[in-house]
Image (tube, rainbow, N blue to C red; front, side, top):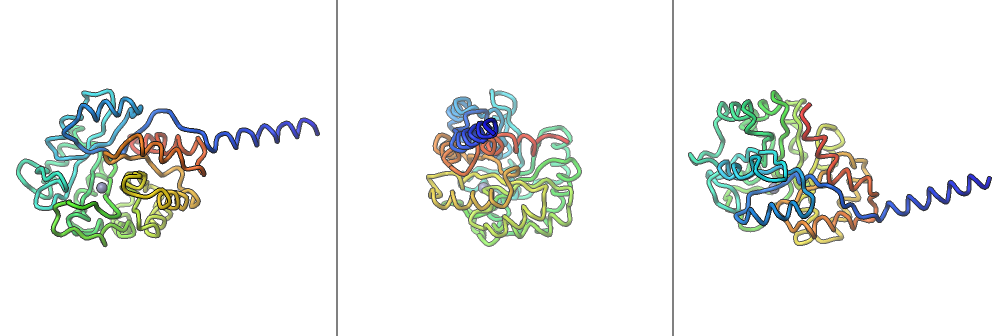
Length: 286
Ligand SMILES: [Zn+2]
């Protein structure tokens, strides 16, 4: 009897401890973009133990992330580019000014290990659905080569320079036709679909291969604490702790890491999954 009480006391003690414990381990940042102050970016990554990152920007700027830093970067393919440019920065996505890169060229780059994932897919900025047939040849390649596809969802900040931007195209529910057509596609919902919670929950529920990154959502400079807390609670309560991934989208790393750490309903194990383990599994070659 006494032993039983001791065990109960120990269990209660440890479970209450892990609830508020701060995660301080290695991090996988699944949402990185190019910045002109790249040395500061690399220093910041080192400081916050970001040992892996998934980066997307103009094709030429991707060169800065190939095997030169302590962080191991996966290289994305950003497209389709409205008027040939990267939203916000205005740089040309591809040197020839194209909006959709040549499919055969993309195939060759993937075969040569120059592209690790497709993304950030900018269909919402372009004003089309993530299930628009113009994207299908690229999805077919991603499925064939088993590389992930990261699709921008949710809303957008001001000054994106995209005349056909359509926020209605940011609901993850619109991915359904593409996910049905390409059942082998590994997709992640960038920005976790916020504020389209219903479409996000449904998509995660019906398609177990789909993950989500929490960039923007976890940024207290953009989303208030209360909304972040409620959205994350809904995702966790729906059982998706194995499918959420940290992403910064070049936000303030200190603030964003703290914001996740301050979610009092997360255990330390859940934080470890969100900061590293889920992404490491998602991006692993299988
Ligand atoms: Zn985005």
